[in-house]
Structure formats: structure tokens, C-alpha cells
Image (cartoon, rainbow, N blue to C red; front, top):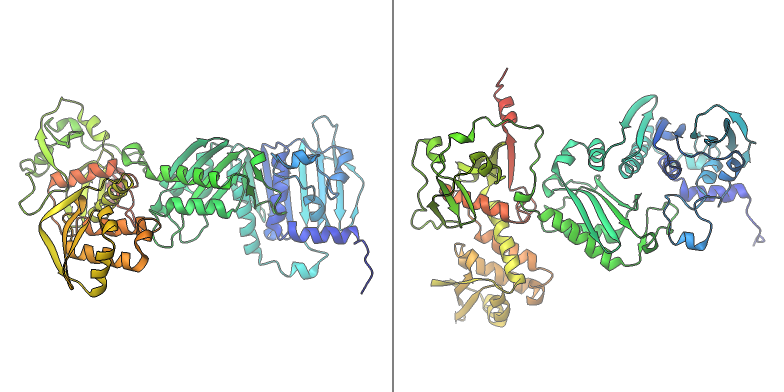
Length: 598
């Protein structure tokens, strides 16, 4: 066996480069972080051949002193920490003191810098294990790091690099992450001489929209929540904007992009109730936390972290996102691509109104104006309404004010027995009535179960149905669970069950099928799971049974009752499977379809 001996400095640096400089994007990340730590307010990135041929980063930061340039290319040399205590409360992006040394070991690097108090700039060149002495150079305040021919001295490693297009895509993603976390800094990205991105200093929402697109900005809702030692801000997209991949997921801890299983799990749990199938949420979130509560010294890439109070952080993130997604429509501003003019003045509508459960008012004879008919009549016999409504008089108020108070507007009619068409101040609202009612019932059931107050409705005529032996056994053995869920199921014979009581919100469902599905769930997963881990799944199933079905003809009163319930219900924008329950088309968009004004 060969004797033990110290490794040459160049080999040590190249080994370190294998961890720090995996590809051009890795080198770009390290250089950009140094620029930010130096206080730069403008950073320009120039790439050639996806960064394989050249990575050039110029900033207007504090700069590096002449006698520190060589130290900057020496491993474990840094200005950012000096003691063990500093390591436990890191506030800078870089701190390990090995990035530039690792890059210089596998590329041809030129470092040019000028501090404000220096008469002129100084420059050094490094290639492998050799570095030149500082020489005068022309530069205004700041630093330029010019990296050429990455892995020129390690041909085997260079072969592992992908195509120019692929490597540029990775560099662009790194650039986006850095730019998202530093909205107050101006960034420019050039590739092969062409400007690909130019981002002016802006607010956080503006920077997010500039990088991820206006669609994300319009589909997103702002987050701003605080707890002891923690502050979460940013933007999460509503579930309807969910993606087939995780390409729009950005989470920053003290402005450092991280990929953390704990955080990912908290976010998945927050979206679990509203996300469709295998779709992935989109978000840009910034967590500010006491540096002493997080360990960033886990991996050279610095994208992995550990938290001292992991459970508390998980709960904080979960509740913050859960709250943002649960905001009722009455509290959300509905964004459109452009402001839509109001085509007709609301002052033409009479002041008489229909009051919904005594909480809000809406025009009644307004419908007569639209259709040339009398105000809507009560629900027909045998077709119970979604919610009770009565015709009353109210104190005169501005009709425009009344409409503005109800984001989903007022119903005009039904389309194919599936959709409700409504008018608000911006234009047309289309509602999937089954999906919307399903979400409303689901939220009502959750709240009632949490309070142990599920209202039970005795059936005038019990729903009797044939059951197999297992269904009868499940009903007999799980009476307490059934009662907690609002059901009273009696055994009439070895093969007959009778449903005598159901949750009041589900009284119009197919009772026999509803009971069969519930018994199947209990048999499949067990009573304890039904009330804990699978609670939401079973409540979603019950809500689906109870929701108004397609081809059910609703009166205008019922449609408006549904719209008002949606405005008061958390997460009403998505059904229990994550699909949207409504969308809006502005008058401007409708005018465009009909080429009005042309």
C-alpha cells in the first residue's frame, strides 16, 4: 500500500471544485453571491457557449483591495466570518472561502477590482496552480470576475458537461433564483452577445412578475405572516395555476435559495386540500429567521439547511400558506389582464332587492329589466333551494356600491344545466355549480366536525337498502364513528340497512349510495383513520354526494344564494379535487371577441 502523504494544493482545489463547481451554473452562483455580499446594486452577467467558454460577472460593489486579490484566490480565505460564533449566525450568502479558489483550479480566471478609495483598479490572472501578481487595470468601482474555458485542464470532467443549450438553461435558472431574492438590485444577463434578461430594481411582486410572467402575478396571492422570530413573505399561486412540474417553486431562507424536505412537506400539506391529482403548486416565498436558528453549513452548494425548531417552522409555514389559500373571495381582489370599463350604468336598476339570509342585498327587479319578466319566484315544490331567500326592501344605496361588494356578481341564468352565468362590475363570471357547491359543503362539514357540531337531519322516511354481510358488520361495529359523522344507520335484517339520520347539509343526496360509500371507506381504512388521517378524504366524498348535480334547474334565487356562499367560503375558488370552480371574462375581453370599437 502506498505511503500516506499530503496532496498537492492544485489537486486539493480540484477535488473541492468537484463539489463547488459542478457545472457553469454552479460557478455563476458563487460569483453572483460574492457580488451581492459586496453590496452591489447593479450586476451584469455575460456568458459564452452556455458558460462553458466564458462566465463574466461585473458588479459595482465594494471591490477588493490590491493586497487581498491573491488571498481571494486562496482556499479558506474570506472576509465574511472569522470566529466559530460567526459560523453559527451567518448573514452573508458566501462564507466558506473556497469558491474562487475552486473555480481558478479548473479554469482560466481573471479578477479585476477597484475599491472606492483606490486610485485605479488592480488585476490578477490565475490558471490552475499559478497566479500572477496584481497589475494596474482600467475599471470604475466594483469587481469583474472573468472565467474562461471551464475544465480546460480536466478533459474527463469537461466531457460530462451537456450541450450549450442545456448549460445555458441551468445558468438562466441560477440567474433567476438570485434575481428573485434581490429585487432591489438591477440585473442583466447576456448570452453569446444577446441580452436575454434585463431586470430593473423593483418591488418584490414586480420582480416576481418580471421573471415568472404576468400570468403568475395575476394567479398569485400575497403572503405576509409573522410569528416569533419568523417572517414569511412572497406570493403563492392559486391551485388553478398548478403545474405539471416543480419548475416554479422558489423558497428562500434569509435570501438564500434552499431545497428542504421539511419546507416542501409543509407546502404540500397546505395545498393538499385544493390541489388536483399530481399537479404541483407554484410559489416564491421568503423566510426571514434568526440566523442562529438555521444551519447553512451543511453542504458546499449551500442549498441544504437545518432548522433548530423544525416542528414550529413546519407549522408556521403550513398555517401561513393555508390562510393565504383560504381567503374568501370577498377579501380577494380579482385581477384581470386590463381594467374593464362598465358598459352600462347600474343606476338604471331599481332599488328593490332580494336579501340573502339577512346578510347581503341584491337587486330583484333587475332581472325583470334583463329578461322582461317578473322577479324570480320561490323554488318549485320538490326542488328544495340551496339556501332560503326572501324578497325585502332595503335602504337605498348606490347600485354600483352594491355590485362592487360582491365579487362574483349576480346570476343571469344557467348554461346546459351545468354552469351559472353571472354579471359583476368587470364582466362575465361562469361558475361550475356542482364543483362550487361541493367545496361549500366540504368546508361546512369540516368546520362542523372540528366543533363536534354536525347538524343531523332525521329522515321522514328512512332510506332502506340491501347490504352484504360486510357492510352490515361495519355498520354494527362502528356506530360511534357513524354518529360522529352525522349518520344513524340501523340494522333491519342480516342483509338490510336503514339510514334514519344524515348530516343536514347532505339531506338531498342519494342516501343509500352515500351510506354504501361511507361504509366502504370505513371497511377499507378503519374507523380511526377515517376520523384522523383520511378525515378530509371522507368528508370530500360526502360533499360530492350532497352537491347539486348537473341538469338540476336552479332558480335565480338559488343561483345567487350559491354565489353568496362562495364569497363567504374559504378556498371556494377550487373544488375538492383542485379544479377551478369559476372564471371571469372582462368586458374588454368580450369586446375584443366581437371586435367592438374597430
